[in-house]
Length: 276
Ligand SMILES: Nc1nc(=O)c2c([nH]1)NC[C@@H]1CN(c3ccc(C(=O)N[C@@H](CCC(=O)O)C(=O)O)cc3)CN21
Ligand SMILES: O=c1ccn([C@H]2C[C@H](O)[C@@H](COP(=O)(O)O)O2)c(=O)[nH]1
Image 1 (tube, rainbow, N blue to C red):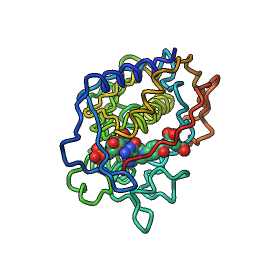
Image 2: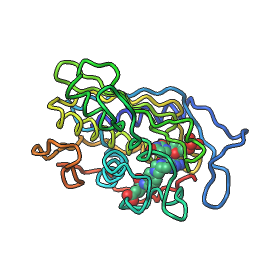
Image 3: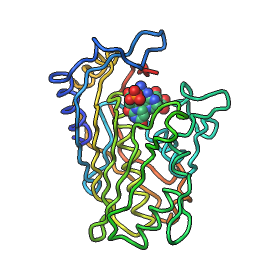
Image 4: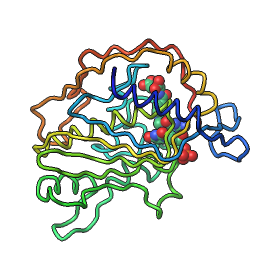
């Protein structure tokens, strides 16, 4: 069975059995019809995925691998904050009339900062350090910029990556303050697993562990029956992740540089409502 399935099942069972509801509280998110979107949650979930063992994608339902990669490249490679640069419509509800989601995600990664060696944005500094300072304990990104929060349509959820080189292995921690388990848990895991593979390949390293630290891991009220049905499914083996080995420049990866072999998730008919 896919290890990602195993973690997802354990996490969701724990949330549904031992989690805490916010039904009595005022909440920010709402459904399309205006109803408050309440959740049941567990605080402080940590999942470790060993990327040498297998690729962490769900088989309980399809995770849209290519759409995940489109969003990943939009944020980390294009460093865009405009939905017109993104194939797919997952960010449409948070964009303004010009298509901007404000000073979030890609915008923050593109901001240049001064270093002794010159100016770098956050992504280029990571690439530089992985090549030139692999022993560094300062290889990280952080897009939770308090100064700009008031200009973000949604505050960053997956907000920080810490990269760490041990021998020839690249490990990473993804810090996430808030996680919509059904809509985006595996979505985020797949994205950041691909990112670690990309960073490792262009730095001459091997992808190792992705440690996913989630502060508020929640299931929305309208998602509970859908998650319960998913938990009844029998997990299947993980597919094989394939990445074009000829790409050595981070900015040369495209959505076609990645594929999965033997990905056979369970059919899934539900349309997932997304809380706004
Ligand atoms: N409440 C909430 N949950 C989220 O996961 C989320 C937000 N808000 N706001 C910002 C982004 C947008 N994200 C989204 C939004 C929609 C899907 C979604 O509809 N996924 C479908 C279909 C994807 C497709 O058609 O390619 C799915 O079945 O996973 C996923 C992530 C993740 N983020
Ligand atoms: O990459 C993402 C982006 C967003 N989410 C979810 C987590 C929450 O359900 C909402 C954001 O609402 P907040 O009130 O700002 O926490 O979006 C995600 O899981 N992954």
